[in-house]
Image 1 (cartoon, rainbow, N blue to C red):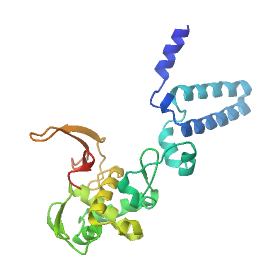
Image 2 (tube, helix red, strand yellow; image 1 turned 30 degrees about the vertical axis):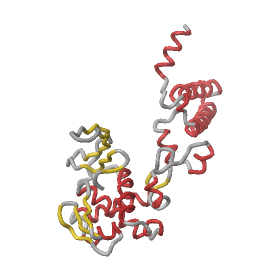
Image 3 (cartoon, rainbow, N blue to C red; image 1 turned 90 degrees about the vertical axis):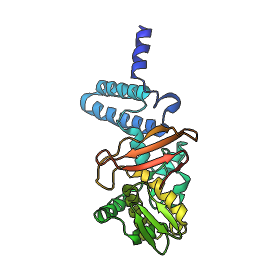
Length: 259
């Protein structure tokens, strides 16, 4: 009997959310919700009903790590950073995003999340730029230079050098994000040089979640091994629109081949 119970427990258990991987904030939130649900049931159906609900809920939390579906995502999104820090959750952002922390993103245990106000403004600016595409002035604003001249698809001459983006979708996303950041006047952003701006926008683009050109969804970011004839193999992180097949992200190692 004991072996049978162990086997059932093993089938129910979610190791990615239990044991060493258990999230304390998620567990606390779900236990509180379980107590509230049990109290409500006890008030309506009696103490026995409340106990059954509480035991079932705590069992789900024990084996699965949480009771409410989506708890890990919801906890990171809605719990204030100070609360997460109290539970020992390290808040992290890629270093390139430090200049836009607070304006565009906030640190989370998962690596960062767009602020709702910025995400909404970014979406609006993409819509406004989509039909005609970014102008030379938009790209100059992106780079923080006086002028930029288009010399090809997603390619510009600016500040004495050539800048080429991964795709028109990548350029549109970056130009729209830069326009929003510029309008907010954050000194940390305006103080960045062109290379730093490109790197910041490249990492910010990973939070967009859809194709700026057609509005289609992105395939799951995947890592592929690229074999070359004269260098070591490279691990490449890529995200491509499922509708128009335009690539939005392509990271090689610690950097990106093109912005």
